[in-house]
Image (cartoon, rainbow, N blue to C red; front, side):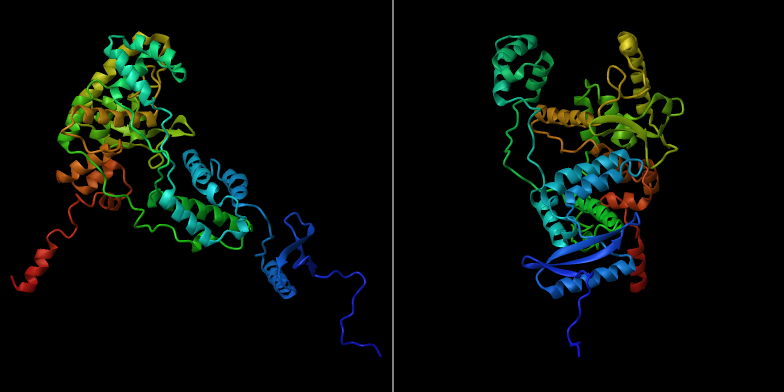
Length: 463
């Protein structure tokens, strides 16, 4: 009689688990999206039982439609080769896509890019966020600044009576790296003063707001990885990014009305002054002000329609519709701003005649000498430089450091301090609700409770 205590082997059967070297590998067949039946495998298990348990789990996942093929694709390859291309416009706004690409390239890939996507863990993400908070900011670059030696030599040559042109010629001869130096750059170099010494070994962290933004990008990417059956879960859901409270913007830095006037008086000769005045008196964002065209302005009615913005995408200046209001946002202008715009239009017409065919008339209110729109980032840098020039010329009365966006915050703060209704201010700023306005300007908005505290306390006391 045959011994039935041992399993019999069929001639054509193949084992579902094999030992390969010192570890075990399981095998199963899966019908792919193209309808073809293919063998999948996964190895590295220490025991045969672990491999068999994993095979059974994979079979159950296959039956429920949640099976994920074991792959060695890295985080970098998934993000760069698969996810980012899937989010190209029109899936995302061009500026948003480039922002995602930059954050992934600079803050994500250098730290977790080589980790296999299916092995990425919440702990890996938490370590990434901690590193970005502690030392995520790259050391400042000084490629645009002249060396201290060039500055000192320029000052010496000017003290000897040489003109800016002669000084530039001498510097080009003495310093091989300064072959493109001209009289204008020499004048700018001396005007800015000694270049600041930068410690290239110094590191600093990114803000909680920026790190949380990195987390948002990764969470969206890993959500798609889960949806595309590339991973079994979205590990970003279990990670711990900076809290929403810590990522909130700090109190906006603003100037007083006196400080604003002092700055404008000091920058009276700057070509950018009319644009800075407009931003300060309108409360517009930088891109909205630079995108303004004469066709948007009714000087007789004293109104302007904010309907487009100038921005930078991948180092290129582009003009696009304002995303929050495709139909335009109408604002009223004060008499002084209207008068300033009338003078600017007259000066611009004269400039257009002087330049002739070289003028590219695109109808921009604030533009370069040839009619082209200002580069937003250079526009901001000029504001910061002029603030530095003010501080240099007023050593005992420095202006608090603010960004160009601080002009918008200054308008809102002055308006609320003057008692203008928060609904009016919110509409002027084109916020989607007064809640946003109140959250940003909590330090100057009147409390919603009004005199409720006194009234209720009076009832308690019997007053």
